Image 1 (cartoon, rainbow, N blue to C red):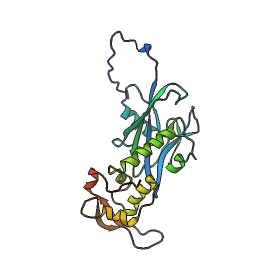
Image 2: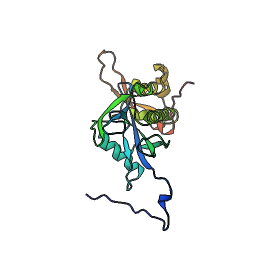
Image 3: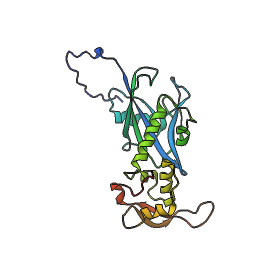
Image 4: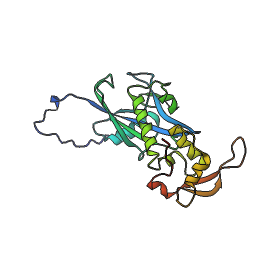
Length: 245
C-alpha cells in the first residue's frame, strides 16, 4: 500500500543547503504500575549505536509524518503497544553530542497506562520489557543516548502532575481499592502515606471516589476483602492529595 505524502511548500529560491542538516526523532516514555511498583517500558537495541543497550522506544520521524504519528508508529513497531490518544509531549532534547550518528533533536512523549498489554519487540528492537523505575533512576540499568535524563524528566513531570491533576487515576483500573490508589502516590513520591488519612481525603461528599458496593478478591493472606471504588468527577478539577515538603 502506497504511503500518502503531504504536500510541503518550498519557497522558490530558498537554499536549504545553506543551513546544517539535522534529524528529528521521537522517544516515548510509558509508565505503569505492577503490584505496587512503578515501571517503565524499555527496549533492548538490536542495532548500533548502543547495540544491546536498553532504551525507551523511539526512532526517526519520517518526512510525511507528524510528530504524534511518528511517536505512535515507533511505539507500536518496537513494542506492540498501541496508545492512539494518550501520548503527550513533555520535552525536547537537542544537545549536539547526544547521538553519535549525527546532530539529532528528539521530542519526548509520555503516557501513563494501567496495563501495557502483551509486548512484542519489532523493527530494530531486540527485546521489550517493563523495568522498575527505581532501577533506572538508581542507574542500575544502563540506558542509551540521553535516555536516563529523558526518563528522569518524564517521572518528574508525573510527580508534579499528581499534585494538580487526576493523573493518579490513570494508573488504576475502572475499579480499584484505596490501597492501589495510595500505592501510586507512594511509588512516585517515594513516601509512605497514612492509610486512614489518605482514605479520609478521598471518601466523602466531594466526589473524588465513589463506592461500588463490591469488594476485591481476598489476598493470599486472607482477611477482610478491600472495598472497590470508581473514579468520581472531582478529579477533573484537581486532586485532594498534596506532597509534603
